[in-house]
Length: 142
Image (cartoon, rainbow, N blue to C red; front, side):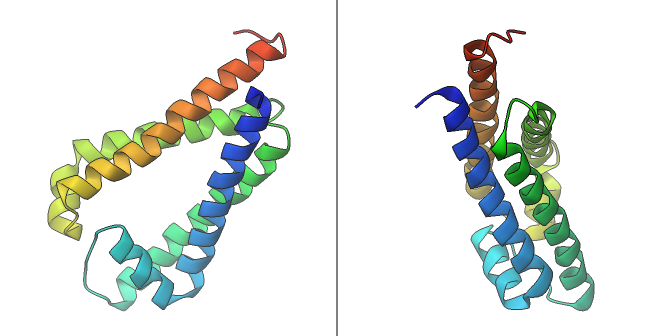
């Protein structure tokens, strides 16, 4: 499989994940509880936190939409791919720079933090590698 096809597939996976998670977080408290548990977090279920999760859901949904649009032609929409790389890297930096807040505020364990870091870090590396290879295959070297 060439780099463009692989990049399209990865963007499609990112899109599906974010569209499903985003819609679930926006519209279903039951989904919110499942997602928070899967994330390894716990906190008080009140109107403020439910509302906050809905905002996170709307952000995730928009990210999913952007990934879906970029998957049609990743080289034409390379800025979106680069944006995802930056977001995943910054997210991982924050997960460790502010890990004390993550552990104390949400009850996330260091193991879950490390696994989540690996999950998004691998995606960032794959996006960067595949984008670079796709540019090279098309003769658009940086």
